[in-house]
Image: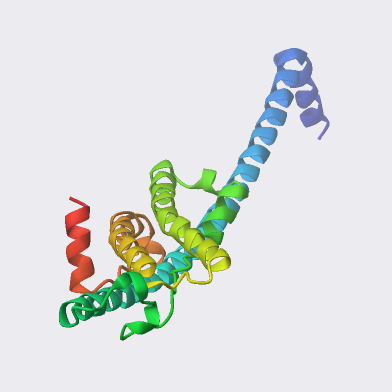
Length: 222
């Protein structure tokens, strides 16, 4: 035992210089700090991935709702526009300037799509979008920028309803419905292009089956 103690002391004093011992201790501390940083970053990365995945699923729910609304409203607008044209063709005295929406069959009010964008706004404002990969963040931003055209039409319709008692004049309604039906297929085209590609693995499905909408999408996205 005494010999082992003497050998250890001999190694410390004769074979291993004090500077080397200090360096070894320093390197051990550095490695421990680096390992701590790595563990912290690994944990933060896992947390960020979970936050991003939750955000993506929230976007899927929002976009799925919007998709259903656009399909529903396009069908309503298209049927109403067709009925207006039929009324004009079958009745020479039918004048859109002195009629209101309720004078046409199929009228269910001046309904707007009222699309949602609160999840996207939360993701942007909270800074979560920066944790998305660049291509996904860019595609989703483009999609919502395109969708904003419909939201601006909604705002215009709401302002008109609030300030004009005769906002359901057929001439005005017919014009607005036509505008919606020009823009909706374009927006749905962006859903097909970007939401399917970047959010398919989070559960988004492109559900458009209306042949008229599909034809308009194909024409506008060329």
